[in-house]
Length: 325
Image (cartoon, rainbow, N blue to C red):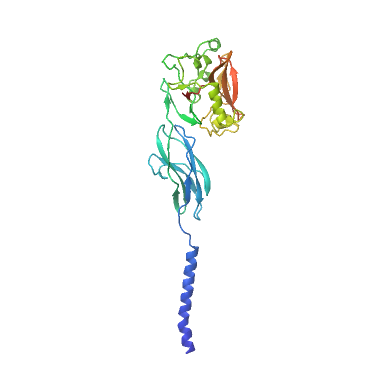
């Protein structure tokens, strides 16, 4: 009788062990879900670029191997559309969106990919800034900085707004004797103006025929100060205005972040004797404000984070940035 009872109970004990093992496996199994994340607000919008990013709040137990943002003109962008790649792992990240078209509405989402799939943040809509065209047909991108709308590139125009030609003076002696408006290319090499723009004397800047496109103007000394004050003053604003890297600036290009999108370049200048100086190390820009026998300007250099407010001869040749009226 006892033997029979033992034989009958044994399968029941095994069954209990199987149930315990199954339950234990269920507790240890990974719950496969894509990462959870949010999309950052879009900032630093220009005609061709913007800054976004995201925050990965939960990787759901699987390492994030790729993260970034994706965008398109459709309302639900995916990683099959244009995208950035911005590191790995959870946490926050910043993404630089480039290659956009002016005056266009885009939608952007942060994404994160792990072995369990790709998760997305909510879609954010933004519209790029308009482009502006000068009388010669040159097209300029624009960026909003505080309350101001600036061109992103230096001026390249060779005619005043009414169509009159701005003289292109290449002879050093002739340049040094000018009392009327003129422009030149750095080292009299037109290819230099592709990136850095033309160099103008102050007589061209102050000419009543205007060198900026309709609806735009050469900024005053006070308007330049509005720009530098937006980035905490002249002593440190250069870091926020300079293009990053060494494609144009020589090393060390101290502190350059270009968080403004202004993308200041070191186009150098033409001195009052007609000699060219400092391309790659310094950028100089006229204001529209006279200062007695001199005229106010701004400069930024590769070895500083500041913006220098200077006053120089009208015969010098500097770059020009235009500001929206």
